[in-house]
View 1 (spheres, rainbow, N blue to C red):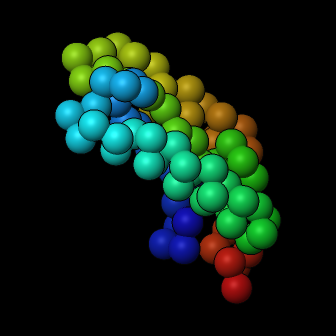
View 2 (cartoon, helix red, strand yellow):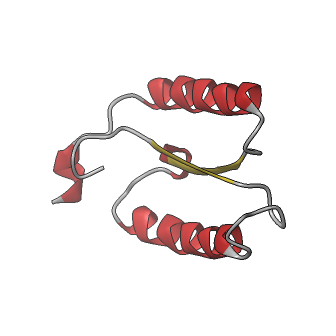
Length: 84
């Protein structure tokens, strides 16, 4: 966001189906904490999203990106000036 992104999509393996065993569970916890932090900066929840996508599900990934792009466009530009 500080560099000008209007939204961030973090994708990971389905829970329980990660090569790194617990990587997606760590990400889930970190994204929950990040959401609280972003709220303090006035960054709306839909601007940062975690999406589970299986490694071989290209259509699901494309759909997630399209949905995120559409929703962020509706929100409009974020504006780095909000970060101070």
